[in-house]
Length: 119
Image 1 (cartoon, rainbow, N blue to C red):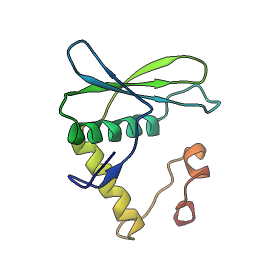
Image 2 (image 1 turned 90 degrees about the vertical axis):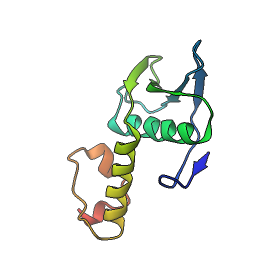
Image 3 (image 1 turned 60 degrees about the vertical axis):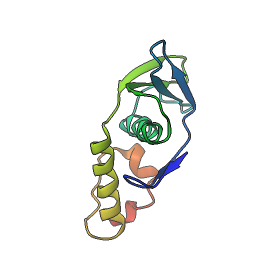
Image 4 (image 1 turned 135 degrees about the vertical axis):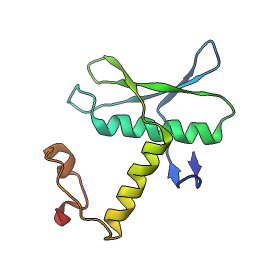
C-alpha cells in the first residue's frame, strides 16, 4: 500500500483482522530476540493505520497488536494521524539539515540508524 496524501507513506501490514463491527485491526509479527514492544513498533503500526484509513472504505481501530517471538500478543494504543505526520515532518527536517539529529539514548535504535554520524 502507498499514499501521497497527507504525507507519502508506504507499507504492508503483516496481518489485518476485521472485527464483528467491520472495523479493521492491524497487527505485526516480530521475530527479534527481545520480547518487548518498542516505541518503533507502535509507530510502524500507526503508519499502517494511516495507510488503511486512506486506502480502505472501512473504519480502522485505534489499537493494534504486536505478536512477539515468545508467542505473546500485546495490544497497543496507536498514534493518531496528526502525530504520524509530525514524526514524518521531524524526520524530513533532520535528513534535510533543518534540524539537528539527537541521540535517543537507546543503543538499540542507534545501532541501525543510518544518521548516527550526525549525533
